[in-house]
Length: 165
Image (cartoon, rainbow, N blue to C red; front, side):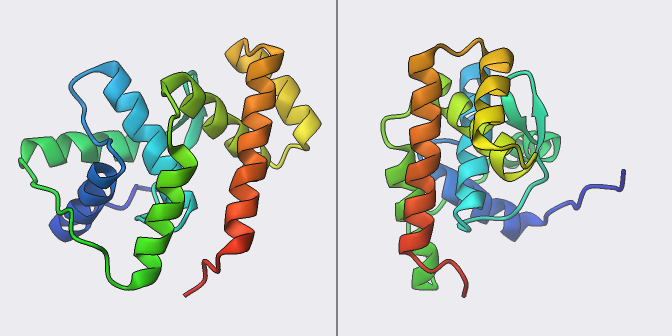
C-alpha cells in the first residue's frame, strides 16, 4: 500500500468549504466525524471535491486520510468560504450532492454510502449488495429499500447531468 497524498493548504480549504456548504466538516463528536466522512464520500462521487481513498469499515466507507485532514483543518482554524464555486459545473454538482443528501440522518448516510460502495467499488450485484448490507449493518427491509432507492436516485441524477468537464 502506497503513501496517501498529502493535500496542501489551498486544497484543504477547498474541501473545508465544500463540507461547510454541505453542513458537515466538524470533528468534535463521533456523529460529526461520521457525517463528515459520508458527506465527503458522496461529494466526491458527485465530482464536487478532491478524491480521498475510502475503504469499508464498521460504519461504512471511511477514509483515514480524510480523518487526518479534518483534524488538520480544525488545527489550522481554516475558515471556509460560502461563495459559489467557479467553474459553474462545480456549483451544479454541489447542488446535486446537497439535494441528494437532503434529510439524510447519520444512519441513512451510513446505509446509502455503504450500499453505494458495495455496488460501485466492490462491484457487487445489487441483490448481493443488499444481502451484504443486511449482514454488515443489521439493516431491516425498510432500510434496505431506502438504500437501494437512494442508489437509483443517485444514478438518475448522474445521468441527468453531465459530470465530465
